[in-house]
Length: 127
Image 1 (cartoon, rainbow, N blue to C red):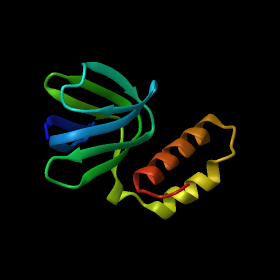
Image 2: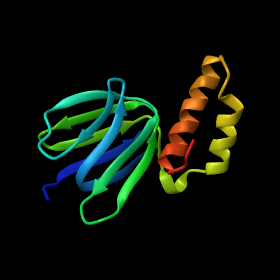
Image 3: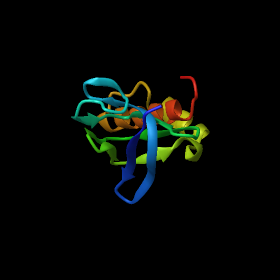
Image 4: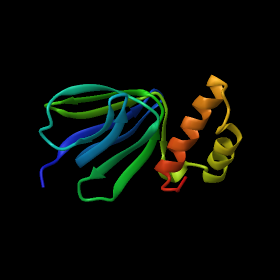
């Protein structure tokens, strides 16, 4: 299968870089699935999981909180404000945060609920 070069980057670290067969991410325009030789685009990321089907390896899933997705002839760059790999997510803490903020009308708590939801989805938890 064809592959593309993918980088998942946070401000403080290179989270992952390598060959991948598929990338899925959520932008302000909706969910995107990217295969090799995809048309160039620039998207604004929203809270949600990013899935990277790595070449010859298992799938990498991470919760991202804001940032940009860039697709070019060279590959895919996911430049996120915050990245949390699924294995690093504290599921009980995320559930607690979601329950505490779910029905709030406060914008800061609504943002916290979106982040908690993204963490839980990336960790493979049902909501």
